[in-house]
Amino acid sequence: MKKFKTIEAPKTVPDNPDEPRSTALDPDLLTAEISLLLDYLSGLPERILTSPRQGHLPPGCETYNDALSRYFLIDEKVRRGDTPASPDLQFLLDLRDYLNSWADPATGASIAFTNLVVRKSPQARKGKADAERAYPEWIQPARALSRAMVVLLHLAVIITLSIAALAAYIYFGSAKIANLAEINSQFKLLDEEILREEVAVNRPPNTSVLPYCTDVESVPSPAKATETVQRFRTVAQSHLCAKLDDLLQKQKIAYTHLSPWYSTDDRSLPAVLNVVSGYVLPVVPSRSWLELRVA
Image (cartoon, rainbow, N blue to C red; front, side, top):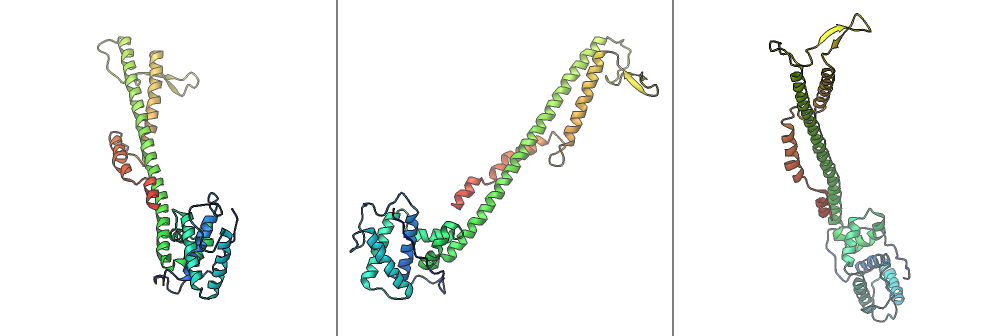
């Protein structure tokens, strides 16, 4: 495709952008819209304007280069403040229609509004002046939409982080519940082992019932006479009591790490997690929903 240079429009804004366009045949508006179309089409390498296509160039132009040459001459006159003749005005209308057929489904109007909305991006800066000149009445609505998009994008980030935080809360809470359940199951297994061990000891019926791991004898330490150590009745009792101490320590740590984010009552903790996962998390808008609104 033959590259061409679009003449940069002066960066001026109408005195009152809220006023409607004076007329659809205003040469200044027509040339600005054509500049937008040329700039847009020059960035589409798959659309070669010089290739054969259904549609016709403006009358009197045999090639696309002829149309460009005539357009730049008229555009220069318009920028100087000269009023183009009727044939030149008809040429501008025909050229705009021809370029719109190439830009389909986009139009000069949609390209202008897009440039006004994303006016701060590098791709839109070069067309912003032409967009403001062609459609001055759209400046304020486009800026309002741009601000709304920024707010929605920030809101999408906040909601995404909130969803991640809730998901992490549920995940770690479930992990803590599973850890406590595992400790409790180990306590039950240890109780069964202790019960079997007490039955195997076969004590006399008149023996007082004492907690299994406190029914031990304190004797002087072989290493240091001033200290005492526990002497268990059997090796099995020593192993079982060591296992009990380990489980008690694990249980203490598990309950300590529940606060401050989780209830220390492990019976109510599953209900709290069910409320968060079943009621709070589903009503939080997803990021895809927000992106759809932004688009």
